[in-house]
Image 1 (cartoon, helix red, strand yellow):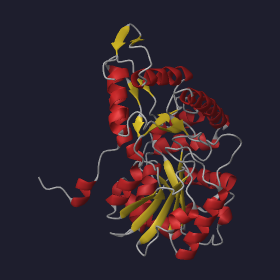
Image 2: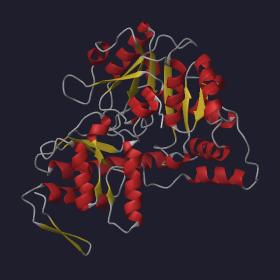
Image 3: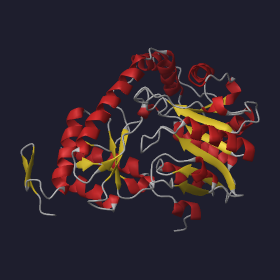
Image 4: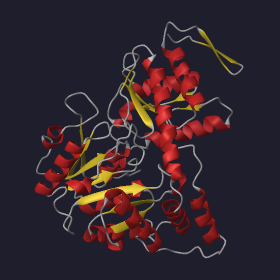
Length: 405
């Protein structure tokens, strides 16, 4: 069988694969604790459901414009004005099948083969493969100071004549790090000076803790004309717990949005009108659910950090936002894939191996679940790894005997 060079270079999504494994084991009645997920457990906003069902009841579920229905684009314009203090027009907005597609069509619109795209490491698992799908080259950059907070010089020294774009995800998946205003400002100004595209993946920008706020990129730009190469992507998946609705968007200059729309038109056409109506309901509806989710995640972070701080040998940096704690388990196993598999096989706790995010020896742990799951999950992990723990553990009525240490 003949497979393309690009096709051979692309692996499956590690996060989606592990979610699938967890679902299958749960269906079999296995006592799975999912500490790897990026999916809030709160209910979808009632305004989203009402908006969707209102259209569904009419029976008029038809094609939509490739770049999104006007009502939703108007809601995104209001959202951009409220949270980014930036007034844009409908032609500056494209609605896509999730943030992933918004980023993908943006990359396809700007990249040529052998172009390079820089992004800080650790990074969201899909960035490298999305860039490879365009025939371009991913350039992950690990901060030289060993933290999760890149400095301007970390990025600058990796720029070459082949560099076309920089991607920033703040607060960051998987680390929860919120990049500083100084860093964002320097990157924005550098990209303007060098003529580079800057893609801001802001999907977690309202889920920030300790009274902090995500930096608004536009406030540090000098060129807000239609020549601007800033691309801001966002969506409803995280802040509204609407992961299954697959609605995201991008805001950029009109010429680029037109090219992105042309590409999307040949990929999928416009997103489902039902799902766009649901997103419209969420954006225009009562917003208290977002703050409720943020407070829940902030409290769950505290519980998870307390559990990890009492775990000998584990190093964890307190996240500034998102759903995640990216913890260093290298004292137990530097191979995070092997470690993650052991925890799933032996104590039925699902974690995400750090290798998939660009940093081996780490596990990404989620705060999306209940406090009960967080506490029990870490207890199971500790039992599996700590030689000083008792040799037996009961999960429900199932007795486990540790025979691998």
